[in-house]
Length: 336
Length: 135
Image (tube, rainbow over all chains, first blue to last red):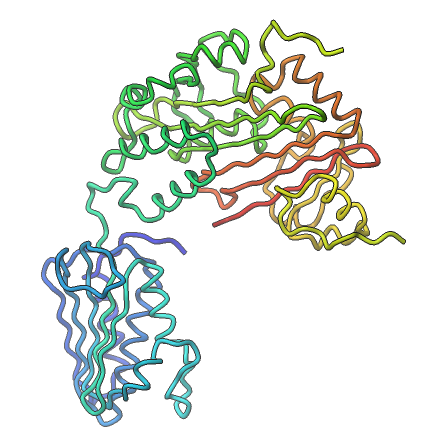
């Protein structure tokens, strides 16, 4: 399932009818959706399931009727938050009932899997555990307050979705993936390059090639720049190749780059196409162990860039070869 | 009947070549299908002679016949140089080839992390071990 930007007003409006239908006649439902509720970053179906779950629990806690209150409101940065949450904007989904409530000992275990007080009515013991899991996976939290005979109030806090001014760093999925790539990279210079790319990513877009080249000027010898003509099978033109790469790879002609080769995994063609189509950095590492020699290590990081900040126009490739793979040199002495 | 010294490793990337070969080559051919990573066996001419079920399930490879060549010649332009190919051939002839490959950052593809280890098989040809991580 995919996390996406979910409009809270729409979500609750859709659920409102359903909730009213399953609440008994003795239960009065009230819905309060803040006028300018922010959107949240979450899995839409999971959010719906979580809210239904909380409302079913509230209904079941009021066998003799009562009031079920659902409220959605913005929680701006600086508001009081559960200690596990970092300072940020959140949206709070509150589901409250004035039913039987929970004893402290029950409340303490309420979000544990297979803990249920509903044996008779067939509860699975997974409802609140799943909601709590969803909250924490989504970067939010679940807070429950309850007292016997006074009812239960459950607050589901979810992080506010970034506005259109979102950068890759604000997008939790992209950000986690970048962290993953950073983990893999062996050479500090390439790690630095990826961090610079990340820092230069504008709102919902890509850094400009000139900005990346400027930041990575010290690595110019080990980098190459390719222009991309957009398309399903993009044509690439090699615009610049650093001197260290030229030395290692032989005198590569500038101009059209033959990329018709196999797109099987691990190939040059696959790497550049991947960075182009995914608009995401691509990293590869290869180690060649030769008997009796130190292993040869190859690392390649490809950074997509865009002159208009949006459509990939250039790929900046950074390549590092260990001395032992620097095999294009003509001064190599043939081993006996 | 030779038995493996230890059960086959769950992760094949950092295991010494001799240990990995010792474990995998002692398995019955059918047992290769039970390994948690994909296995491909190439003969000395680079032709695919074994393709494990795990690999068949996990891979989206349309081009598997090319696999024996790609890490030698297509990873980067430098890999096609005569000197590099000479060293690869020498290692293949001596059955000491050992190549590790990793790829990460395939943003929209489930196969976004990939690890490959290519090792000379004791009885000629090559083993290719492949592992994909969706998340």
